[in-house]
Amino acid sequence: AAVAVANIVKSSLGPVGLDKMLVDEIGDVTITNDGATILAQLEVEHPAARLLVDLAQLQDKEVGDGTTSVVLLAAELLKKGLELVQKQGLHPTTILAGYRSALKAAIAYLKSNILIPVQSLDSKNLLEAAKTSMSSKIIGKEGDFFAQMAVDAVQSVANTSSSIASSKKNKVVYPLSAIHILKVHGKSSLESYLMKGGFCLNATRASQGMPTFLGDPDDPNSQIKIAMIDMNLQRHRMAMGVSIQVKDPEEIERIKKREMDLTKEKIQKILDTGAKVVLTTKGIDDLCLKYFVEAGVMCARRVPKEDLKRLAKATGGHVVVTLADMEGEESFDAESLGKCRAVQETRVGDGEFLKVYGCQGSGASTIVLRGANEYMLDEIDRSLHDSLCVVKRMLESNSLVPGGGAVETALNVYLQEYALKTLDNREQLAVEAFADALLVIPKTLAVNAAKDSAELVSKLKSIHAKSQKGDADTNLKNYGLDLIEGEIRDNLAAGVVEPAVSKIKSLRFATEAAITILRIDDRVQVNPSQQG
Image (cartoon, rainbow, N blue to C red; front, side):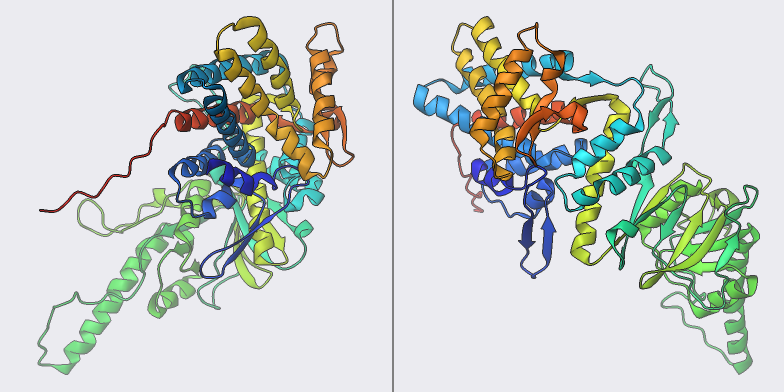
């Protein structure tokens, strides 16, 4: 079953991989190349196969990229393990021990010989990594443009955090949640752009009488305060079940007037703090709007909550849920206001957006994606997410490895040698099986590119065997596949690189998943307990 799952995503691996069209029961269509997305949409009944789906999700969460290869690797390890059990009669425990020692040796070798530490990552390496991650996606053709955008976006949200746990003070972190991606229909994908230090909200002014522009984005001294509220702003009404018996009709008028005054006081409290922009996740009724328009304040209602939280973080404010304070009175704390330089309503595509310039909190950036239709925008969003993750990982770990099957082939050659030299028991077979399984990545890459995989992989293996002899040219270890031309080349020089974290984690995760499944020898269906 696990192999069947791997076969689904197999053809989408690599720069010439194909896309999948997923149709759900309602008839919604998703067109994607992202392994994690494909597997997340599948309805997998088999428990062992479900482990593989979880594995892809884990890789997506941890590293962001390399989901397809992790599933292929795990399935291949399982296949090889089963062959050993069934054909050679090895005990699963031996195979597990072999796999574990192979993983240990592989990661040690990867860290000492293949990994290229980059002390000062220049933007060239980052761009190359982002481009490599995009090469297999729909935006691969415009890789240069989007790679630049991804690198700029991640660098613009850099934040130095001094964590108490780690001894290294002032580690720079790149919170991806600070990058807001907004999808807008229309124009071509090349007209997407990045708003540095700014934030775009998919919301419009609540009334036409409000200003469209506040503040000055170029003036560092200009400051606009934003109130972010998670509650309804509407006329004060009597609570349910309150009945008032009135003898004098004038009193009804007075009650109505008092209700209006209560509302006005509430809004005055917000305005007194100096808020020029009011955003709420709920509604604002006409009475409240009237007061806001009179005060010359810009308001937007029904702002998505997730966006509001992000904006609060970016502008250094926080979302207010209630006006009640500890004393039971109503007050609005000026501390919770976000600050920025300017807010403007602009028309983009079919709708209006609020743009917030110069956020003065922890910083945020917005990528506005343009594209022809929903499917395209969703796929660009997914590919961009993968690239952003790759750039972030690379900036945080400062190390890279050559891509295009180079790492897997080098490890294959090394492990074959390791098995012969250091092991003289049955584990040797398991380590060799592990080494063979690694070749599934370069083989699949070659098959997807309609090239002769056996020949290319053999050539690649001989080059790596030469490089590991010790006296050969040191650049040989960086050789991988060039799938467009169908030949072997130095992938480091060609700019096909990946973050080392991604490779190490995918090896670890795949081996863990394979071990978990190989340890199972029987499946017992548990009957629901009988209710007596």
